[in-house]
Length: 81
Image 1: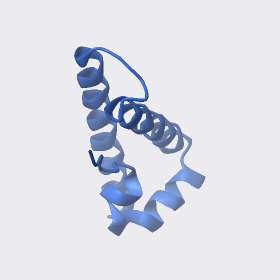
Image 2: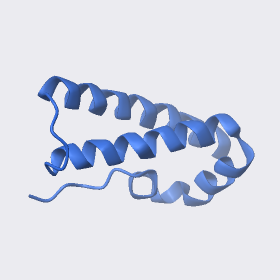
Image 3: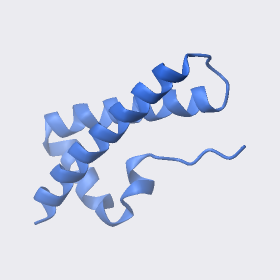
Image 4: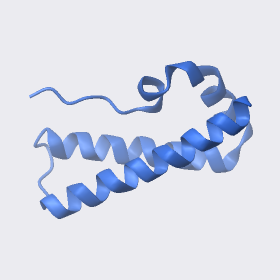
């Protein structure tokens, strides 16, 4: 089964430079970016069967990932405006 990458560079290729700039210049963005990246990897491992958890836990992690992505996207849009 193929599992889609959800890292921010794949999700928002048009913001590649802004992602790089914010990771360097904005500690809050950098922390959220790291949290998102770690969460994305955890979800991927669960989906691939590397880690076993409950479906509820997986759904909770996916919701958290989506929330972080929305927050990071809003920061990217504000930075690029």
